[in-house]
Image (cartoon, rainbow, N blue to C red):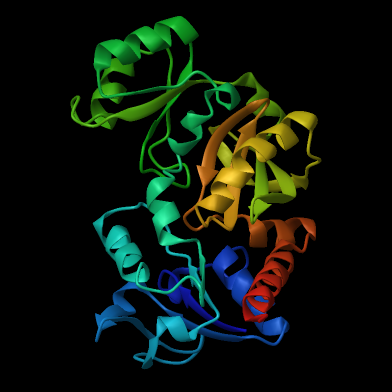
Length: 304
């Protein structure tokens, strides 16, 4: 296979745990060609989507290539899904998905917000409020007690705060997160089940490929690195069976579900991570397994 990987600048990525680098290493181990670029290297020229690509360790600037010439384009740029990110997806829209596998499909990424998409399956999620209204948020916290508030476009735990009904800073926290009532946030009850682990379930083309547990890190209530390989419960499989086909239909091939207890919390579809972390820390083979899935998909596309 010929892969083009679109990612953040590679000198900022940690080779020990970064999933993008783990996938590249797995592809190279299996004999595949890999060329790399960033979103700044994308262009449309002559009506064709192009990228200025180079080998992983080759110096800039590289050479221009038609993205449609690759078997697979891995779009691995970290969120937030801001203007720069969306502009990149619009360029990728011009790649013919009949000939080149897009992981993940840019149209699906735009549709499946990581914090909100799961709410179309309310029976799988905890009680959730999405609002910028301070009074609504205060009522929700009064009803549910300690809550977690987070920005809609957040990632990697950034901007995630606890809202305690007795905290004298609560109103100020809400004001800060909502930008004085001008921006909605996500509020959910604090789930005590998190002490038993936040489970990351890896979906490969809509099917569960493995799972790990992560735990709050010391005094920080947010979630740390993968700590142990996890078994899938009956409820986990029910969640996967409900959302997997819908994610596959959107072209979202590599997805990470965050599950606490019986509840689906987030659906990670941008640069879904933790595969390489799990491989390095726990001895799994998730990166190689995913490249094998890509091999199978590309071979099927080549069949007459």
